[in-house]
Amino acid sequence: MDIRTDAQIAAHRLVMASLAALAGLALWALVEQWDNPALPAAAYLAAFTFTASFSTMALALAGPVSVRAALSGALAPAILLTALVSLAGARHAVATSFLDDPVMLSVAGILVLFATPFLLVWMTERAEWASYARLFDATWRMVVRYTVALAFVAVFWLLAFLGNALLKLVDVTVIDVVLRTDWARYMASGAILGLGLAVVHELRETLSPYLLLRLLRLLVPAVLAIVGVFLLAIPLRGFGQLFGEFSAAGTLMAVAIAAITLVSAALDRDDSAAVRTRGLRLATRALALILPLLAVLAVWAVLLRVRQYGLTPDRILALAVSAFLLAYGACYCGAALLGKGWMARIRKVNVGMALLVLLVGALWMTPVLNVYRLSAQSQLARYESGAASLDQLALWQMAHEWGKAGQAALVQLEAMRERPDHADLVARIEMVRSEPNPFQLERLVQQGKAPNRAAELLDLMPVRPAGATMTLGRFLEVPDYGLDAWLQACNRALPDGRAGCVLVQGGFAPVVAEEDQAVVIYLDGDGQSRADHVVWLEEGASISTMVQSGTGDWPALPDTAIADALDGRFDIRPSGQKALVLEGLELVPAR
Image (cartoon, rainbow, N blue to C red):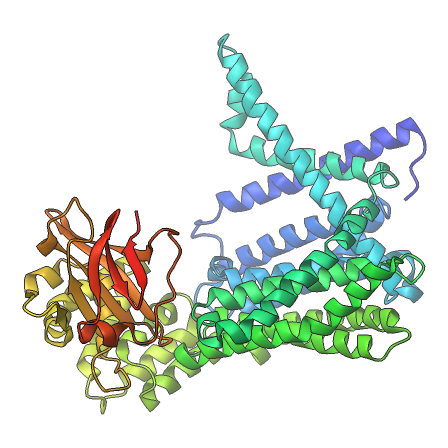
């Protein structure tokens, strides 16, 4: 939309601020009715979804197109998204439980994020709705508009708080009244956001995304170097430590997404605008070539967790994201390998993958891809096959997060009367249904099991040096998470058949008596040796991690650490404080 005169500029700013303020007021009204029993949950979910999605898309469209066109253009997509969300909400006994699920909210947000650029291009040049150049410009302009406008809102509220603090010094409370009024805060935030969006559009030639894109290009060589070093270090470091924590999958996916973003930024809207420097172009192509390796590692990391613990909605989302990244990586690599025209091919890949994301996101909201059902079936299958114990079942999630599918799975579990632990299973399910707080539930479960677990640990845990002993009372004082980790480790076997745990008593910390502290070395679920320092004080036992003396780094314990400690091949000697020495590696309690 072309805005030329001062009057047109003022009118556009006023309209945008008013529309966004009304959107903020509508959201406030919905928030106020959150727990209104007279309002059907399904109707509330539909109203909330429509208001949020319609406002977001209409404000993004207004500016590039007229406000009237933006309002009419955002209507159909908002209605479609509302229908999809309402369909997904039907998975729950109470539809508004959808709004408590970060996975479903993320998918709904992705649908809005990916659909809006297509909608804008379709409204401005219908025949070129899939033109990469137009989609690229529309996407990055929206990113810049919303980023700057949201920053403007943040600055506004910072100044409002500062101004309130200043005026209160002279007993003027006008700003304080606004700050304490909920609807006023929502309206003010909306109005400032709308005003910011209007001004950024007016300055679109000055605040264009090109500066950001040029800066992102400069990061390509740095990211290429980091990823290259990481990939080269894997054979030396070993896969076991790489996949020891689930965060590895999140990190790998985040880096892969960053690589895709940087490659797209470097290739720009077309060849004439793409990176021209030979070094940067080669770095961009190299990053596209190695992207599949990152994606494969991300998929592998997620699959390892699925194999260990089964499917959950979070893991299904992680699988979907990693699968998309693998598809991106394979296509980017193939395009880069084919030589001439590789940049144009990658741009086509971006359009196709964006459409595929929209398709899968829409299916995610339908019965075709019911992640609650898939997760519940996975947990049931693992329990029936013996791959999962009672403690490993996601019972609380089934009862409180996985909707009707989760509740149905609990009924099926209750019907498994042939199981030897059926009585315990039924009792646990009853406890789960009555406890809305998962942390409180875990505490109750652990409290009930603590005496038996402590007695089992006392029986299994070897104590060193020779002659040192432990008591049941000492283990009863250990926090639940430590008791759990050590007991699981003691039930894992070393290659020679001995328990995968050992407790070494010694005066490692100078402020505690020698008999009141120890180091526990144990095998974690990935077969890696860990070391904890446990101290018994008057108020109970506390656990801290052992670190490498001198550096404070997390130690990479040798594979034989537990066996060495069991066989007495260790020293306890001063190192500022006393250190446990295994094969020359000095371990001290973390401070």
